[in-house]
Length: 262
Image (cartoon, rainbow, N blue to C red; front, side):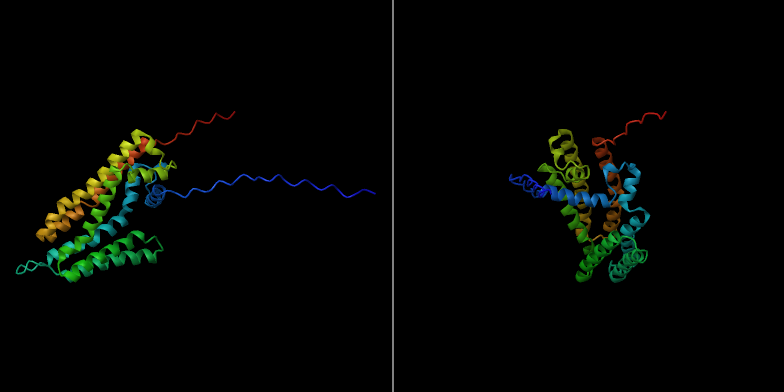
């Protein structure tokens, strides 16, 4: 008769303290947020896409271009066509109504097609806010105030980030490329990201420099026209330049050639 089996020894206890998780820093949080937004917009340097494809995707294709341009274009055309020679003013309510209507149509069309509505909904909200400024004051030129505020905010953010050494471009790319803030230890990357942020800040500043005098002069037609001209036509080339500069810093990894099968 055999006795009971000997009890197995207890596993050794590891009494060493567990390492505490370090909370993400503010720069990491900003980089993650910007990187996620850039990836949704198709601006991922690790994707290996062509420059033309990236720029086209960033603009949203034909539909995205129409959604961003057409509401403003309709406002300017209708307001200009309906200008009363006696007063020098156009039909503000008709211009605002048609502009908001086309933005709403774009949003509804995306909802019906069950497509992402971020761009169209953003355009509708922007058109509604701009229309509110003009409607409450009765001044068509105030339709452009939200755009001025946006340019000031974005331009200031890019400029400050470049001057303090934490370029928003660098934070975005660092997250997308999986290196976090390690790019700040590379002098070449720091320099490129600095000048890219300065270039974006200059774009927003140029819009303000050109458009603000027209706003104070009350020239709605010229102001609206220049807003369209300085929108996507300047945005697209700068996206291309940014993409090419980043790809030069992070060239695509070529796969090693596989040995021929016997």
